[in-house]
Image (cartoon, rainbow, N blue to C red):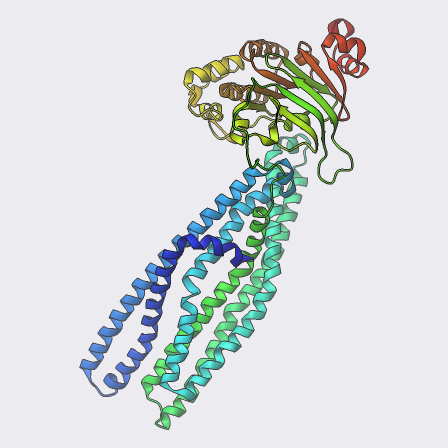
Length: 577
């Protein structure tokens, strides 16, 4: 899974990969030359008292060392550059895929998991890629080259060195196999800790209101302890690796010195040859250590790759059309014909055969009890999810055939929970129209009844907005979200209970200003408050996902018991009349 994920993303970096291999080859050859040069200095210079040979050999070793260091530094830089490029591309792919997800896919993964997969999991893959690119070519070359050079020095002694590699591989391979499921479990528990922490930060007011601080601390401590337990198990196994390598290396060194001493005593080996052998043992053990270090990181990177691949392989249920419609023939009429919607795995549909007509220049309202499907109905228009039955038409064109860019220009949605992005008031208002002038922004704020409190801010339009707009009240966030849509000036306005946090006076002023501003547009309002929608040109009443009435406030009060019940739960007979 890991290498299948990396292979296509490494192809664009092929020139740098060829350079990397060449640099590692130079580095390895220089490393392999050093023990032989050292042996020559000892046998031909030190033992014979030839100072000139010692100096010339030492100079050659310094030159080779400098070449090795330069090649190693260049190879590390090149490998890191390629790995960071791969991670950047991978993060972009995951981000674009998540952007294409509908509410269905985002709900399946959860926000905390998607954040972890885009950041932590990709970081694990990046770390492993750096190790692969800086070690994978050098380690086998160094190991094979060290064994070959050792065989050239002395064959019987080289057999001792040959035993080192399989013993080391077998000892550490067992540890690596046991680590793989532990790292998968670690990533899942990182997900859980992120989810709990995100819930606690987002819902801190609810936690404090119900004095659940201790419960939440215990819940986070539980998630944290689970992560700690798995991390300790993986850490203990990791801790076994280096002592294992060290023990095998030391035993091999003792065996080489013992056998080598007998070979020197028998005159079959020079002292410099034994020193060279110890150098090649060090290089071989270093190459094995490099591979083991790589294998140590591999399980966690594989777990991350599986999770990232899961996101990339998930196809959005709301897919863009193959041959999109890029222009609309009319001014923005909305028709819902026999619309039904069912969430995946649900026993019953949320919407059943719903019909709705919204014409330009008119205001159409949707009202119903909690859970009647009002917000779901509105979400079908901008394709937050697609209807499972029936059609949603804008100017007679099915929304599933519209180009996404055209959809964004045509439909403006103010969601039930308005969200502001970190930045300034101006950057949030320009979200749907980046080239909007300050005059357009102030006009939208005036209509949304937000100009007064924005002017009262120290920096006005340049006043900072925290993530989610938490430095503003609920009513202020709603008005800024409405102003943001007004700046974009779409043909079709969708207000999903977006006046709920406003006091009656502000609500009335805002609706009066909106009627003038959206006189030529199609307006659909979902609301719980009767006073917000009673003057609408058309009111659609939903009950348990079905249309049970359509008409004006007066006609529905007379003929529709469901609407009448909703109204009288909020107003007296006299107020309703």
